[in-house]
Image (cartoon, rainbow, N blue to C red; front, side):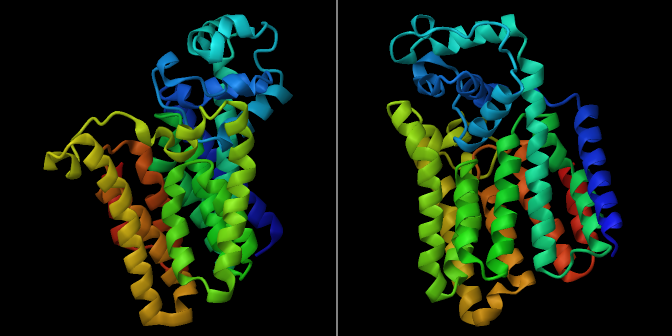
Length: 362
């Protein structure tokens, strides 16, 4: 396939994704404060108040990678810099009044719209991950590449992650997960560890992509993969943990997973106490992913790293999250939907059952 055709496919997918997000009225203001509060503090060099105490804000904040990216972008383009950012006196001792002060500043500076537009950058991370994974399976640089990119852009969970809920960090994490799987497929386990470490620093559901890779990785590469992942996460998280006096720890470990439960899922209907439900919702998907990957490695051996088997394991792991969640918001479906689309590319056919499932999700 000619390079010009590939570029045309990339451009078409971008146009579809941006257009559908805009038609939804996005990037949405819903859930914006899980990331923009930290973005604004970081963009003005106030890392200490990027993660203020829980008592000073109303929502859990997202993991650290996306606010660092968006904060750097906001600083580069001087978003909101015409209005002085609150000083330490206004932010309060230990940033106790930071939420209110930064909210007031955002209204005066009118930084919201431009800050939300930064979320579009997340698509390019997902686009890069898709291209890398498709090419690692032999489905890149051919008609499959533009087809899958456009199909992902059309998938409702993908564009609603920006258009209905503002969760670019989920899109970034998914793109990095796909990129990491691609590098593992190519035997580049150190790079896979780096990419998965970054994914964990963007949204914690990335652990579900990590688990199958740890289990099926060649024994000689497993330590390299895990060490690279831990080192990368430490480089991102530790400095901000120190600068915020540890206040960013909850965001780094739990992130937006600490949101209140609105009920309605099967697990939530069991009637257990909230701490028990949270524990079950987080541990069962991981345990099932470990068991499934171990079974696949036992049955397939090295063939568990072949495209269809490996992508199936990752897709199943993401699906376990949906089966055992306490909440079920639109953007929770993005990882499963995108990975299933890539799986069909690896299979060499778009299955009717996938199209039907995407329609039902819509």
